[in-house]
Image (cartoon, rainbow, N blue to C red; front, side):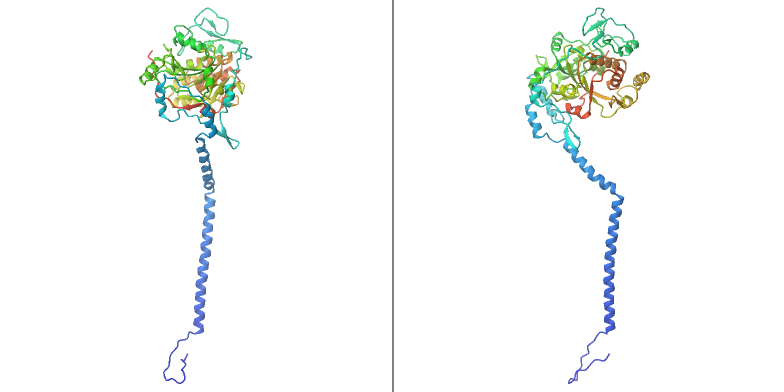
Length: 483
């Protein structure tokens, strides 16, 4: 294409003019670039969406689990929360009384941890959090009457305790002469129960005759006349024991001043524990008290096995406190933290029960418990096998449920009314731990199943047991006696 010349001027200027075809080609190239960019953008969006969908399909269970786990952790954190204002008001109404003779316990309380906690244990029922143990309000507990039943309507009206004496005392504590025979750990305290006597003891009659400790005056477990006189005055008892220097004495808390006037707190020590506590400046006062506990020092314990010695106050409270109508047993590893009268009302009187004990938290079968006892070296495999073989022979089922509840119980807390039937039950239970192993959780379901007539029993859930006590654990291992 020629360059045009301007008229009247000899000089010329060349101007490059783009061809129309070149201009169209350039426009088409620009359009293609724009289309590629747009297509790449849509492809990126489609790929990203597909990746999101694939991720959700692959990890949908995890996406549901994480929020649920977060909610569970949040709810669990609320369980250990500080008491509410209402709980604090109730705590203010609880009277803490300490006797001057127990200054050493004040130093012991500095250890912290679970000691002296009063906050309630809660659980969720129907989506609502509520207390596990529902006690009466403080004002109602102050005016609570203790029901006394002198006429018992159960199948057992009277219990006869076999002893070496020939004389008979008609009433609630009859004595008969007993037959001596060799037994596993039977001695002058237990009497030598034959296997035939064991079988007869499970037969229910209006008058039951069986061994129940204190067989001979030479059998041991000696208590001073002064302590025995005090124990005769008790109508309601909270008791514990520490033999062999094993555990410290944890002061009970949570009771009212009115309750302190109605309830005896009695702790049984032996001479080993007495020496161990005195070495730590924990001394019994001239009034025989340490804090709220009346300390009874027992001489001449009948067994080398301290665990077996501990079964005497645990199971034979009706023999140690013959005038008592109700008792609460608390293992020495725990601090009792509720009003005893409130506990009796909540666990016995409200449900018309005569005995209350906790369900086991980990296992549900005697046979599973036997395996755990061997695994944890709580007893030898041989003695456990003897006991389990006998129970199988007697027909004890391997069911994990007994009378609608767990077939295994945890016996660190025992709440009961002292009736002829519950007294019979405790005697049978004691004889089983003497004959077989000291692991009383193995024999409790057997005796309950074998006796059959004890139906008014409240086997409460684990969270109530946790509300009743502050668990401190065993401080030190008990020292065995040397025979």
